[in-house]
Amino acid sequence: MPSIVQFTHPGPEHGPDKRNGILKSWNKGKHKRKFLISSGAYADSELIRKTGKLAFWGEWEPPSMVQEFPKPREANSPRWLHQPFLPNDLKNLESGCQNTDPFIFGSSFRYFVCKQIRYKQRKTTSLSKLDKGSVILFGSTKGRRREESFFQLDTVFVVSDYIEYDTSKPADIIKNEKDPYWNIVFRREFPEARDFSATMRIYKGATLEEPYNGMYSFVPSKLWSDGEKGFPRLKLQNWEFLTNNLNASPKSTSHNEQSIQSFWKKLRDHSREENYVEGIQFDIPPVR
Image (cartoon, rainbow, N blue to C red; front, side):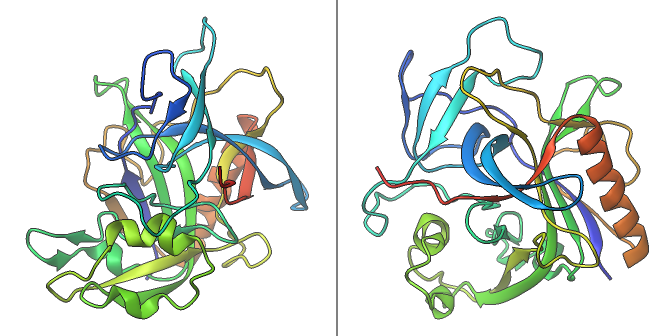
């Protein structure tokens, strides 16, 4: 049975490497979010695919050029604007470069490892066994006081398909070396095989053109013009199936397909009411 998964990941924002700097190098520390701009595609109100420059919150651990937004800034808005890019050599990166998961760039969204396994116990979690049609909400808890806290959403991931892989033989699934995903993301987690066997999944997100039960993956985004200000992540507070002050452990609840479809539609409508568009595809960042 498919599930609605509330997936919390760290909410703090990446800044530049140095004070007043303009570069954020490939992250080797804790995961954080970035406020990003990228060329891509979005769905209009009639579900027609349109293209443009989009601004959005997400995870991008490879390098980015950075500029600071001027003050004053709206509450929970970003301090930094990131323009993502890739280094020339992706195969020979230094060790410790973080992966990006979920990965929303390219032809479809992908999610492959985070919280699917407890490495110390060498045991997989329920996130490695999600059924097709599951909806994963990636975001962060905001606020310290319980009565004021809420979930700030950055990515809606609808599972349409998956590929299983073994941690002891990760290279077995890398068939298309031309796809930059493997070097940007997968090899960052598996530079070599693990010394134990566990089965996990690379999940593929449903798209506007290939939806799952009418649902598609999206990032709450806005069309971007130079000189504009940043904006907060989509706020979800007191929502059915969600917890305002969820800690690091995901919350997963199984539901029938009709309930999940209804929840997804309510979520998409709320995003639109808050003046976001559904970012449905983002270009692989350029090489610099």
